[in-house]
Every structure is written in structure tokens, then in C-alpha cells.
Image 1 (tube, rainbow, N blue to C red):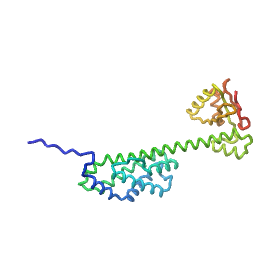
Image 2 (cartoon, rainbow, N blue to C red):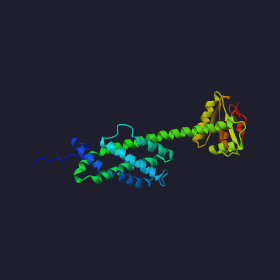
Image 3 (tube, rainbow, N blue to C red):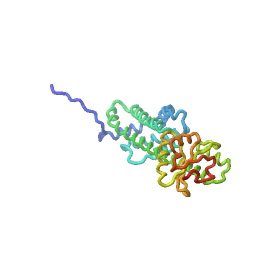
Length: 275
């Protein structure tokens, strides 16, 4: 009796698959896909409650599925997907954690795959299997582009926050006669007690490197230091919360070659504590 050979399933589309594959994609109801996606996303931690309007989630969800289906028609994306940037940027600005965002948009694959299996017939089973890799890679490319846009926007946000913070710190040193309201505004933005003392530290020349090491050590220990470069003193100075200043003194910040001084108004002497 001659041996029998089981037919092997293919993991790549065949030349004759294209027409039926397009028919399956045409059969997808994008509004239904969006509704199913939203029903899952709103249960994702970080989206419950949704930090952005549900109407916005629905709008970008619909555009995302339109883009994904178009990508599947051509075998995948070969360039930037416009909606991925919009999603990444808007979710970063809304403060949605990256983990929550990744969990949410990976539901795209589940919803899309389930919809494909619903519109397919039993005769389409092998054709759908042959297109699994394309579906996965297309969704993964979209997810990757969203993640890149999110990361880039978060970096811009950190730079913006740093710029604003540096401007506030500079105001402490540059404004010699600030009003109480101005000081209260700066203190609130920096998370400081407007009536509490500040420890202002300065170093110059070769001592600057040692001060930077101290700053790094203190921040790794969970402390906060606000640095500012004073051109007229050739020194980076920093103001600390009074609750953190004691720890810094124990860290030998008051050494013979570095200077420190308590000050409630560092703007009164831009080179306070320098030696």
C-alpha cells in the first residue's frame, strides 16, 4: 500500500488568493469593528474612565480600522500611517500610560481577526490561515508607529516641562524684587513651600563636577534638585526643599570647596553660598 502524505498548510498567500481575500476585506463592517473595539478598550485600566472623549476614541478607532484594512489589501504598510501619529500624540498628551495604550491598540488584532473569521466560510479556512502573517505584521507595524509617536511626544512634553521649570527657577535668581504673588506662583509650580527656607548651593571650576555627582546621587535616592546656571558667577546653583536640605548636608555638601547657605529669598543674592 503506497504511503500517504498529509497535505501541508501554507503560511503565505497563493497567487490565486487575491480576489477572495479582497472580497473578505470588503465584507468587513468598519463601524461594527469600531464598536467592538470600543467595548473592549473602555475596560482597559487607564481607559476606565476614558481620559479622552468617547467620541474621539470612536473617531480615531474608525480611521485606524480603515487604515488597517487598506494595509491588508496591499499586503501591509510601506510607509507612515497618518492616524498612528495622531493616536500616539493625543494619548501621550492625555496622560495615558504607555502600557495601557499598547494593551488598547493590540485589541485591533483580536477584533480584526474575529471579524475575518466571521465573514469567511469553511472553504476560506486555509486562505485565512495563509494571510495570518500579513494580518499580524500589518497590525504590529501600526502599533509600532503609534508607540514611536507616543514616545516622541512624551519627550517633547518633558522638554517643555523642563523649559518652563528652568524659567521659573531663573526667576528666583533674576528677579531681585519679586512680589509675594510671584513667589507663590513659582513655589506652587515647583512644589515648594513659599514660606519655607531654601538651601542654595554653588560651585565653580573643578568643583562643578563634584556637585553634578552629588546632584545625581541625590536624585537617584529619590530627592529633587532644581539646577540653574549663573553666568555671572560661572556656577550651577540649585535650590532644594527644606525637607531635603538636611539630607544634602549629611551628604557632605558643605565641604570646604563647595558652598551652601540657607535663604528664603535666593533672588536677593545671585551668588549666595559660592566659594
